[in-house]
Length: 425
Ligand code: ATP
Ligand code: MG
Image (cartoon, rainbow, N blue to C red; front, side, top):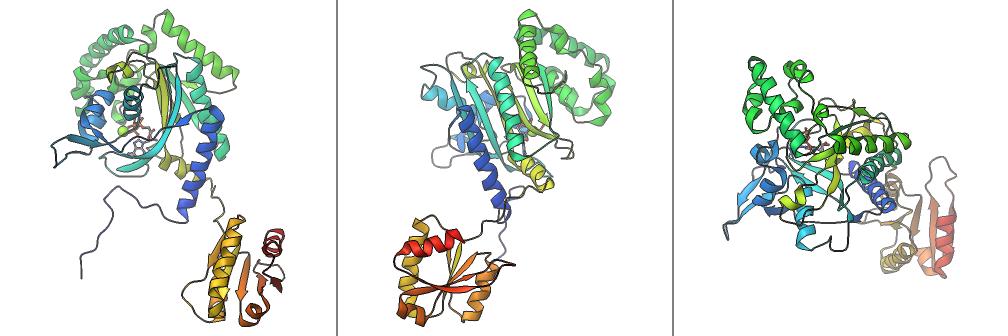
């Protein structure tokens, strides 16, 4: 016996019937993007490691410890499985000069890879949908990006997601906040955990993001970036808030909502749920006006968000929002083998007319085929028997639960008779 092979830890198979929920979610996302004029972008899953080091930042969790990096054994290139899609999308935008005639609204979806400890809502291969508006300074597009996520919740029938926002200001404001923050944490050095001590001088802003309960009080009283904001940043933040209010969108200003990198600025936001345990952030976004230049492009403002699909699907499962399993319109039962070529042809005609048809495969008695037809959930069985074949007909039996299990013969020519019979019933 060969040893059993199984999926890599933290990487999941998505199987029926659960995959139907994924397909439904994806169709809603496509509809959402169409409604807001965002166009789809697909970038490679593997990129040069340097892209993520530059595009996410050396002192982030992702780059420090979560990347699947490897050397291409054929040419020695340093490569990484993408841990997120913004850096790739910005690279592609620069490489293909997409901003030559003005701003662009783009979206993506697909698998991302991070070497984390697997747990509920946290996997090593997970999936994101993201939207990015490149070349617009906001706050109008910031509000648009937030409100389109609200629309997605409505389309999905999800309630109770909370919007948190903050403003990270600009580099000089963050520099003065950073100095105050370091001084504050140094004065309370004894209360810092190991992670915080490590971040104290490399990336103190990230300490505010700590998930350690023992440090919450310390972080609560830390100097606030909001207090350092100058007039322009304040105006941007107030502009966003005014637009959200005008759109009837509630929000909480969370001064501890941060992104640890210099090219993130002004608006940041998260959509948070209380129904997901420790992994409550479903969607995170913000403005990153410095990133395009950081990756080598002409400076241009940008804002976007990324949503964790597994976390949204967890919410959908809890809300028991499962689309009906797709049932075939007809199941073809073959009681007389020589009728097979004709049955295949009829099935093709029905599919061409938009019907879903399941062909019985594997032979067996009429009785066992009828059992399979029932189990398939099909609305009708199409029975090809000898008598029907000779008469150029097929026997149509309704399989609807509760309904009269009537059976009638329908001529195969013209095909519209059968099609009408199946769609009209
Ligand atoms: P966290 O603080 O939970 O680690 P993050 O700041 O690393 O999140 P982002 O990089 O902003 O997350 O990614 C955006 C969204 O993608 C998250 O809000 C979450 O919904 C989802 N996400 C991130 N990492 C994972 C993962 N390992 N498994 C599943 N979903 C994830
Ligand atoms: Mg993370």
